[in-house]
Image 1 (cartoon, rainbow, N blue to C red):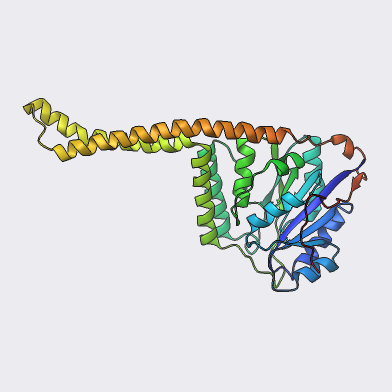
Image 2: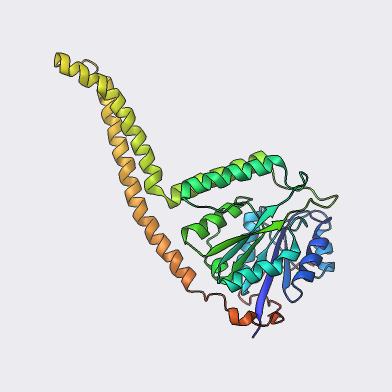
Length: 331
């Protein structure tokens, strides 16, 4: 039995690039099935993708995160290759990325983007990526060098255990945190990153999407590290209460009186709020541990990558659509 490889391409108004993207992955992985998920395009994306030989499906909920969630739910495969439909990722690197995942029994390989062209990878995006990557490393203790890369290879274990919640471009951040939290075996490989073809326009907003990604990191830190998150608030409140209490203590030591009752009451309230925050973190940390165990069990319920299916590089069969899913096919 041959391995099943699915190439997943989320797409929105990529008439100028999707044909080239599909052709590139078809040449690199000739036996894989290429899926293009159209996200309410108003141009000829669907027609061009169909003509190029892709299986085209639609997702009505706008946003890349919504598309990825639908793709992961619909498609049944052994290996998943996810990229963008804008012809910026190097399709010729796909076989090496897949081979790395299989040979090392990994659950995710990230195509770390390398480009010297400013038009391909703008300086603002480079800076934002570096900033968010560094923040993720500080908050979670480890990270990838390119957390916003959309070029990723997944095992079935990863895809079917990933509880996707994001709606937009913050999906890559959520994917990275999921891998880090479950301590999945992952790797990165440098891949070329190209400028978009003429007529193709980026859908990523440097500032608004950057803010959404930053907010996602903070939210995930609150959800995944509640003891540290709420403990930081408890510490800040305790320090503020201490700063208010020191002058009162000095006055009381000198006179035996507490003349500023409002300040004393405020300090007492801050201590109480700090204690509540700390205990909230402790309780939520226990809940998160239980959730993590459940997610780990869901991850382990899927078989690992079967390297025997890849002994012969020609033993790669096209993917059949999942019988459980009933996606809307493009006309």
